[in-house]
Length: 103
Image (cartoon, rainbow, N blue to C red):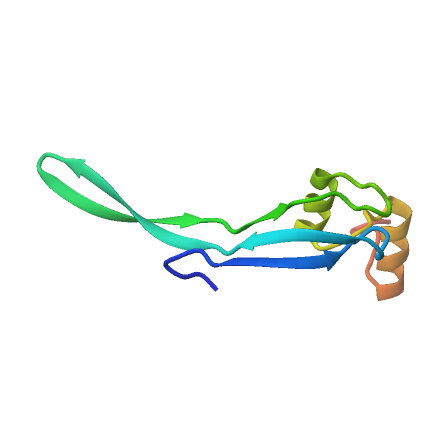
């Protein structure tokens, strides 16, 4: 939800890598604010969008992953990067054509 002011949520989540350690995070929501442009005695109000972001306050006590690694994974929402072979297998399982216009 995008509002006029940013809302702040503090919470504790499980480590996305080991699922055992607790990590303290603060989540800031997206919001709009106004900026003013002034020229030739006129003022124009311009809406400005601010992206939401997450702050990670501690590293995982169990697996030792750093704050930056945890933040990246929490923002992306996935824990594992798929290899090329895994993607090909997933596409074959779905029945998608792997060669387009092949002879």
